Image (cartoon, rainbow, N blue to C red; front, side, top):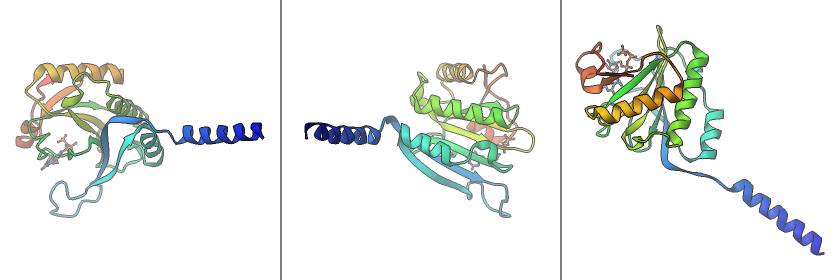
Length: 197
Ligand code: MGP
C-alpha cells in the first residue's frame, strides 16, 4: 500500500515538474511584415501584424520551433521580436528618438544563427543597457538580408556603443556594425550611419 502511495505521489510530482515554467524578465511579441506582394499605394505598415506574445522560456522554444525562421521568409518580408507594448515603427513613442544597429548576413544559415543568438540574448537579458533596447528585426532583401537591433535613445552614444559592442561579441562577427538614427532614415533613406563598432 505504502509503495503504491509513494508511486502515486511520485507521479504527481513528475507531473508538477513537467508543468513548471520559467518566467522571463519581460514579455515579448513576435511580429511579421510581409511586403513581398505590396498593395499598390498602400502606406508602409499596412501589412505589419502581431504574431504572438509570450513570457516564459517554454513558450519561447515552442514558438521558435513552430514558427518559421527568417531564412524561410519571402523577399521583402520582415520578422520582429519586440518588447510587448512597443510597436516596431519609428512612430512608436519608445522608438521615436531611437535608432538601430545593423548587421548584414552572409547567407541564409548565417541569418538564422544570428537571429537565434540575438533572440536568446534579448530574452536572457544579456545586455547591460537592456532597458534601452526595443527589439530586433530580421529583413529579407533582394540584395542582402540583415538584422537590426532597435534602441531607444539614439543620442546617448555611450549606451549605443555599449549595446553595439556587446551585440558584436554575441554574434561573433568581424564585419562592421553600423548605427543609424531613425530620424535620419526618415529624412533620407541613404543617410550616413552615426556610430560603428
Ligand atoms: P526599411 O525596411 O527599414 O529598409 O525601410 P530597407 O527596405 O531594408 O531599405 P533601406 O535601403 O532603407 O535600408 C524602407 C522604407 O520603408 C523606408 O525608407 C520608409 O519609407 C519605410 N519605413 C520603414 N520603417 C521601419 C518605417 C517606419 O517605422 N515608419 C514608417 N512610416 N515608414 C517606415
